[in-house]
Image (cartoon, rainbow, N blue to C red):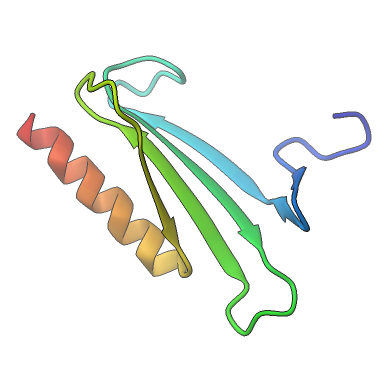
Length: 88
């Protein structure tokens, strides 16, 4: 990624502004649950904020992908995911 700031990559017409990897044991790429949050901004939209949340839980083979258009929706999704981890 020569010439780009760390954590900023092109994605379609927008740019990835932040990528966060969260695991239940605090180790990137480890643990039994993982969530990746991709955030970008869509130019020309009244609400330009966009996020894609991709997660796995409890060693399940399927990946769950959801989308959010507000910061609050991202936080709500993360909180729900963390609560579900405590149940497993």
